[in-house]
Length: 215
Image (cartoon, rainbow, N blue to C red; front, side, top):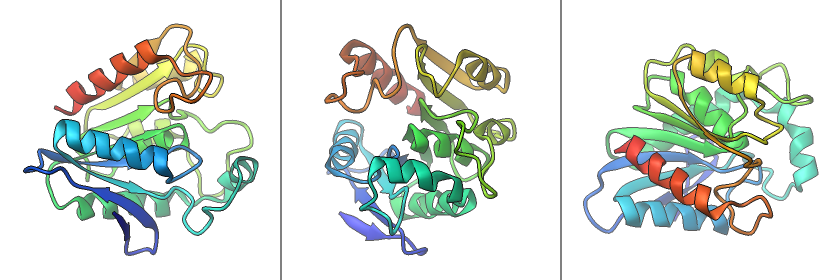
């Protein structure tokens, strides 16, 4: 069901049918909340007994096209997004709560690792360093947050992802994160089966490792 966080940001909240085992704040990719992510949240809740809360990544701008979203990234206030993640964790109503995300949402999941609110953080092809054109006055590279994190961090990447080059993955690993590298996979190879870059075999493996990491 759709809820509204204290900031006014909409979020999708999904509860399992039985007693929940944990909470998960799940950041969507740059295109934000939509049926694809509602379905992912429901599947995770049903399969694992998790309460899943997904905040909108561009609150108040849901109608923006992809190109417009890229143009808006430099103006995003990362602290406001992190505050929404913490509020979404509270909305889960269960402990512990992990945070995960995809693409831009994966970047914010990595940034949330240093809040102290989450017991684990997972970035699926989240940008370790800001891509060209994404830097702004309220933006910091995610690696700086991971270096301050006191919780386990998992990064899941394809080796052919231009947004997440090998030197950045090496930095993430050196900061203490566990990094999974899928040979030959491109950006977005896990969460959306309709994408040409989707790799069903890798996606199945990554979802399984993700569940084990949170267990």
